[in-house]
Image (cartoon, rainbow, N blue to C red; front, side, top):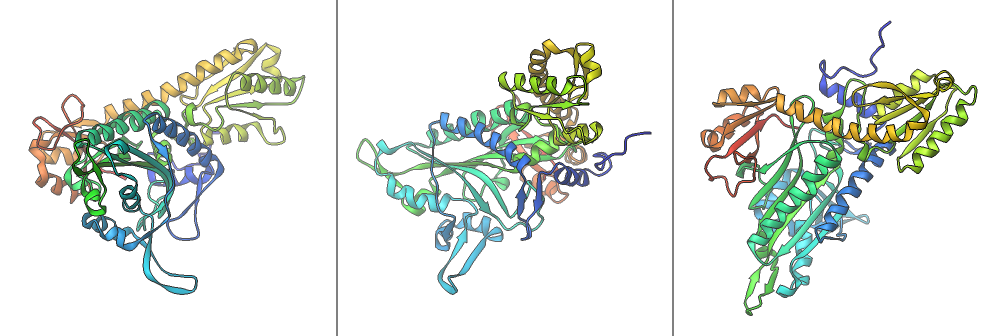
Length: 470
């Protein structure tokens, strides 16, 4: 009898499959207030590994962590017109506190450019104070009309970096460094997700920015997901908040600024990019359990051997869990570990041990092989490296297969129904971008023909990547 699926097949209903994985892999649940979420321990553990990898790279870029208040005076947001206009539909505003109406409403943090600039204006006095590089790990609130766990929620977790520089070029270089060496490298080398790094069009820019850079990933259904952004803010916020510095020649100038962030949306990306009809498939770099040692039956010393193997694998530096719950059927346990996306399973039973072997199972491709007990540690290490590389290769192959060169607006629109379309930006332009948007297709980013980042939208030979997006 064929195995009954516990998840809706992806090909049948991808959104339903996604909801099934989130629920049945015990990743998250909806909170009691619409649009909020409870992140369960397994998903939060993944987030902690992602957070640690990002935090290390952010600090390597010279940034120090700080924390700023959750509540922001409403007047702060109103100081930068484009910024408040962009965020107004998403704001949560507190009008009462302590049983009284507040004299001035306060906004629950949607992003922190305004409140951080209030303090930057105090802290920056001289060119010797620059560059000023700060980051905070926090929650933010944006009132979401169409919530979806991890992808779009009213409250989510993120990091937001904010920097001040003496020159426009220094700010631009730094924003690109964050995009390339913090975000893109983490997404590629840790999350095993290939991303397109490019420039946002004017219509897709962050509210209040002069330029926005983005990392765009293709999900398993061919849609795009904006996974991280880095923005050049020019001097817009500096002029509003009076963030000036004394140059080495004695002149007063406004600083040039950047801001950048990624969020728990990365967990949604992991699910949708790597998941299959059996559940999650986690890259070993962020898997809370990299190796599950499953005891098949506790006979003929198998229990002791499984425990010894788990200890040996932990000593080798792997995150290991021993599953010796023989009161639960072996099949049920194996399915649960598959659902949670554990990269490697080592199955230990008396029959295999009698032949001097254990069974090693890779989650990325489902392969099973008998390996000698004495070689288990080495073979597990090789398998983990292969899973990390294999997931990236599979995701890249999907993106390559589903990316089409389009010669016209109609071709781009058609290709975007199942993946990405590449089209000359000169043949698209603002008018073509608006026409595509009317059909739910957006320009995800602009690149040079060689894949490099463009200096501006009017540069010759630019390629636009268009797609449907989450």
